Every structure is written in structure tokens, then in C-alpha cells.
Image 1: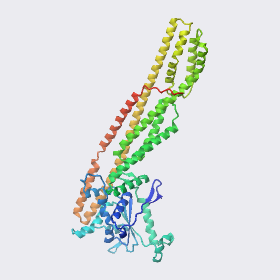
Image 2 (image 1 turned 120 degrees about the vertical axis):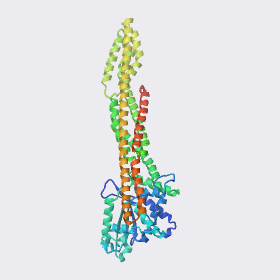
Image 3 (image 1 turned 180 degrees about the vertical axis):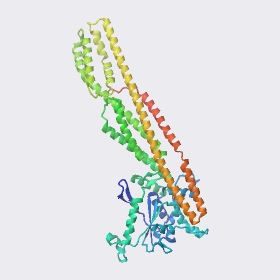
Image 4 (image 1 turned 60 degrees about the vertical axis):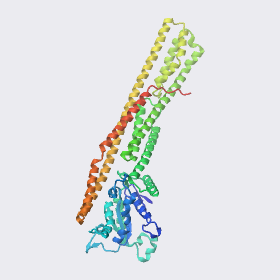
Length: 544
């Protein structure tokens, strides 16, 4: 394997996979050659087949591996009902472009005295011979397979790279030492690869990355070594499972990193936290959608991501409340030290002491409210702190001999009413927070549904384009068969074309979209239940 940056496209790498030569009699097991040929097809977007001399019947028979592909590759995982013919009809969907590189070519490019192109030379070599004898059918098999399996065909012919006396030291020659008749087609060949070779994709249009290529290779080789026939559909499913799980992990890591950079706890409002969460969630979803593929398989991983991000949000909310509560409690403890000293010194035990304590308490509360960045638990922490000091206040009230019994009763009622009002304010805050959380759930739901719709539409478009390319190739081959007088083969091709057209129309995209749409409301309602059930919780006091 040789990897280089693509000379024209910065978003691609150019990967050359070079295999050992085919047909070496010393190897003993010819099945190795068949598997190598099958692997080369499964892994590449452009297959370059090298041969020496000319494209004659002998050269075509040496390419007999192409006739064995129906036994070496399965397009779909079926229950055994699909015939080899139906299986091979799908090959066009994912087979690479085919380039035949004819080396040491010395013939004139002409037919019946008329000049032809290199491509014309290849197509002429692939013309079928008429007749129904066993010999003619055997003669036509490799040609038919190449025509049927490879929608894009190209031919390059190369003269000898150097004169006879330099051939034995080719590896040590500089480019200037090579023959011009060799360098000229080499330049055209490279230019063709750079300009026309497509990125490697799997069925559905997903572009294969280096990481995915490694996993595909392992899946295929493991299948071969276990005695199975590599199945593209199963390989893509296994690959999507691996990639989608990794996409979830990458998206969660992205979310955590962004939250760590953008969020400072405690926040003054729930809205502030939810705004940061929404921004980080959006970025995480973009990371997931960029890597995930296979609309029929993405849903469960998207659900897992959604669940993890919800848990992260809930953890953030709990941490935010706890950090706020701890900060507020520490502020209150510090501000109360003056009052606490007065209680210990008996300042508030003298006549009129309760009123003085109340005034100092209110001053402390005012100072507390002026402290910035206390967070969303400011009132809750104050209520808890006030409850913890109720015994002190009641004791001072009862000891104050400057107040009559009726005044003491009225003051107790006032204090109770104040506590009830504070509780009511806290309840309203909780309800407002719950409403904010539900609105955020709806926002998240709408965004997720839209992302899945866009993902499905994109994959739908790629699959339709893929199918249309197959139809156009088969129409071209159908026309060629009619022109050459092969009526029966043309009718068989018509059946394949019709099946593809029906497949293109009948795929249940709306049903898939409906399933996608039904998925998130169910998740949403569960999230609401979880939010409501935890609405009345109060952060725990820290040991501090």
C-alpha cells in the first residue's frame, strides 16, 4: 500500500494497492489468485489490470478470475433464494472502474486499416462472437463478465520503457533515460487517474476513509479465512456498526470538550446553561452526522447519543445547582458570623434584642443579595439557611421582654407568612425552570428530527444516483447487445433494467421517515417524565 496526498484534491488521499502477480504456477493454489482479485475489486475505486503484449483471446482467458467473481463475492445477505445472476446484477453498484494497461504494446492501433483509439481497441476485443456452440459460449464468458460487471472501461497501451540493453536495469534509470513513447501514455494515464478516479464508496454512497478501509479489509479477509464468501451487505452493516459507535463516542467527547471551555458554573440563570448546552449539542450532533452512515442503522446510535447528551445535560444542571448552593451557603455562613457572635455575646438577649437581631438579619440578607454570581440556587440556599436559624430567632423572640405576648404572636405569624411566601417563590421558580427544560427538550427534538431527515434525504439522493448510474450502464449495454445482434441477452438485460427501475420507485422512504419521526417523541416524553419526577429536588449540603 502506497499513500500520497491527492495532487488535485486536498480532501482526498491517493492510495495505491499493489498485489502480487496473478497466474504464477509456482504458487500451487490458484484459489489464492481468485481471492486476491476479488479483494482488489472490493477495496478499490479504480482497478488497473496489467498485461503484456496485446488483448487477444489468450489475454482474456488469463483474466478468467472475473468469471469466478459470482462465487467469490456476494452483494446481499440472502436466504439462498437469489441466483448467481441476480447476485451479479448488483455488482455494477459497487464495482470499481476498470482500466486495462497493456504493456510492451507494439501493434498499430487500427482495424481494417482504419485508426482507432485505445478505448476502441479494448471495446473491439470485448465484442461477443455469435453462435450457440459450447466453444463460442466459453469464448464469450470473460468478455461478457467484463462488459457486465464494469460500467466504466478504459484502456492504455504502453511501449517498452527502455531499449533492450537497458531493460535489465530499469530500477536504476532516471526518467530522462526512458523512451518518449513510454512516458507519453504514462502521463495520460496518471492524468486520467487524478482527474476521473472516484473516491472509494460503499453502497449508499458513503465515502470510505483510511480508518474504514482498514476495517473493511479485516472484515473481508476474516470472512475468506473462515471459509465464507465476503458479503458486501454484511460488511457494510458491520462497518456502520463500528463507525456509528465511534461517531457517538467522538460526538460525546466533542460535547464535553466544548462545555468545559464555554461553561463557567454556577450560571445566573437556567437559560444561560441551556444556551451553552444547545450550542455544544449542535456541534456534537454535527460531528456524529458527519461520520455516521446507513439511515437504517443510524437511528439506534442517534438515540444512544441523544440519551447520553441528555444525561450530560442533567448532570450539568445538578452540578450547576450544587455549585450554586454550596457557594451561596458559604456566603451566608460568612455573612452570619457577625450575628452569630452577637448571639453568643448576649447582645440580642437584652430587651429589644429580637428587633435588633431582625434588623441585622435583614441587613445581612441585603448584603447577600448584592453578592454577584451566586447562581440559580440563591433563594433556595437562603430558605434553607433561614430554616436552620429559625430556632435561634424563636428563642430570641421569646426572651425579648420588651414585647407583649400579643406582639410575639403577631411576629411569629409574620415570620411564618414570610417563610410561606419564600416557599411559594421557590415553587414558581421550579415551575419556570421545568418549563424551560421542556422547551429545550422540544428544541432538541426538532433539531434531531431535522438532522435525521436531512441525513435520510442525502442518503436517498446518493442511492438514487447510484441506481440511476446502474440503469444507464445497463441501457448502454442493452443497446450494444441489440446492435451486435444478441436479442436474447438484450431481453435479459431489459429484465434487469426493469427490476432496477421498480426498486428505485418502491423503496419505502416515507415509511423510514415515519419511523424516524416516531422515534424522538417517545424519547421526549420519557425525558419529560424524568424531568418532572426530579423537579422538587434540592441540592445536598456539602460537608463544608
